[in-house]
Length: 99
Image (spheres, helix red, strand yellow):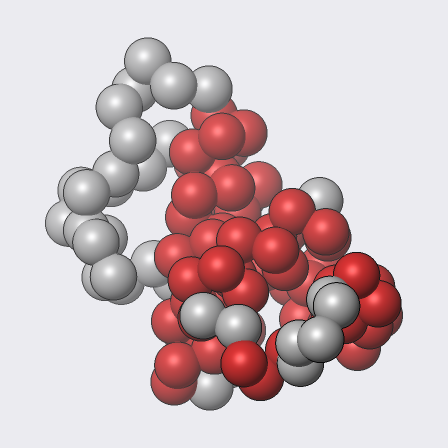
């Protein structure tokens, strides 16, 4: 996982989505719980509170609706299963479908 964060010029919601994506990738690889995912201890610099709040909203929302989100993704996969997807691609899809 890259520790490079988007620049301050980018929108707060975009930066929040990037944080959520990175956290969901981490969750998929480690199985960390919600608290561990949303404390963002891996970040090297502090992020705006609005950005972190939006990321937390996306992360917790996805985790609460994981089955529904994953079913929507699987319904669009042709000849593939969710478990075969690249983990980065899956994190992108999950973030996009939930939001």
